[in-house]
Amino acid sequence: MSIERIGAFLIDRDDPFPSIGIESGRLNECLEEFHRGSFQGVFGAPYFGFRESHLDFLREIPNAARIWFWDCAFESVDGIYSLQNLRHCGVLEARPGIDFSRFPSLETLVVHWNSRDVGWAKAAIRKLYLWHYNPRQKKFLDLTLPPRLEYLQLTWLNPASLEGIQPLPHLRELQIHRGRNLSDLSMLPALAPRLEKLIVTTCKRLKNYEGIANHPTLELAIVDGTRVRG
Image (cartoon, rainbow, N blue to C red; front, side, top):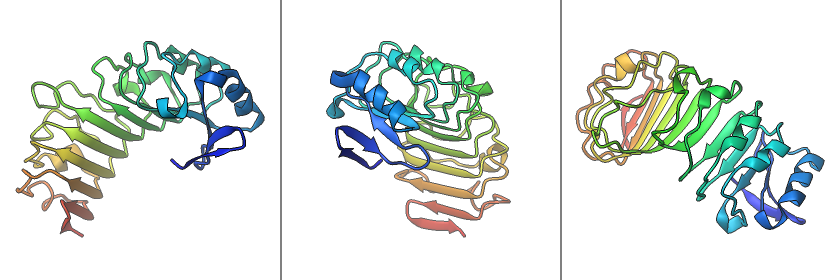
């Protein structure tokens, strides 16, 4: 994001979703400017003046295609369900669960893992950034990923292997960052048979490259700065 104040409003000129910052002290003004300025999205964070505990105001901008809220604590996120054209969603930190199957146009999702989230198996998501997957059992036993994923990035996770993740036949790129226990990627060919690119960083226990060296379609693999394939 590249946020700057232009005139009276905070603006992120991200292409293709130029967005306006929502400031709680002037909520209605921001929503009116959203409509006047032909914006595609909204964003908010406490240090940008956003202090809402809910997202009900999204019902006033049902055509928004992108939302991005971080460092927030939400008591309700029901307002999201009014966004039937939502394509890019980032709602981090503390919040209730979300049913991601209810967004037929959602392409990109950025979230912290939340065990109350549902609808993954029917979600249309193609690009997923998942942070802080750290279950007690240290395995991917309760993670059901969207079946159409083409890009997956996992950051801050504790499983030692990929066991438990269902096959992702459309996955082309996988990135794994800060997997403190990760030591085994041997299931990679079965998990992602069409994978083309693999980037792994800060996974100090990953020394065995089985699953990388023998992957039939992998074109590029970099593990902690070492080019293993490509």
